[in-house]
Length: 283
Image (cartoon, rainbow, N blue to C red; front, top):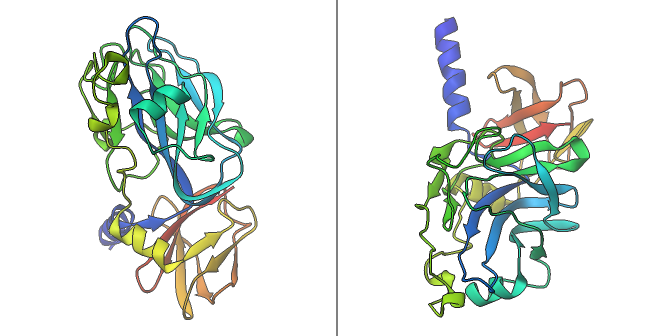
């Protein structure tokens, strides 16, 4: 009986396609230019749902270092279902990726690219003691000789992959080092958008359908309660923790609040009887 229950919980957690309000890194670009020209460096992020990104920062760790430096903003205020860009040079970005930048989706920052490559990059919440939301590269490991080193190259997050505070290489498509060597406008070559397709990351079908249906948890993260927006009828629900244990259950109506103040801080899954599941965070 215990084995059957455990198997069911594992299947549940593995099969969850959750709609959540989150931000994830979806692309990294380190270009190459001759001396005297600025090589474009780009971090692409995707905002899933509506998120206030004011306190979210991008940090770097040199290949052979074990400490994080720089806190680059990615924007100010709320964004909804859109791509954001952190770039080292506006002109280099516009020349190589024409038509991408808008008045609000691009931020200038001090991006790091060393001779050896292998830097680590992470997205953190500065309002929560730099809680890690997403990361590329392994914290504390020398990235020079690692397969995830993208010196003079680029990486893209695989479709349907959620933000992850632990780096898993298989969640990324990593192009070989020097893929962008002698490429781009600064070499009088075609722009990098002929090689790299920005804004190509897509959500899973279930996640997209939940988004389109307008089913949301608000606020997320939350301390005291969550409110369900977008339900068309009364729904039975269960809340699971990351161990697959049911920690709360009940019935919810449109705009009803579910009290969560007794839950410990962490990630939870709100599962409706109709099969839809939404991830939320108890702050």
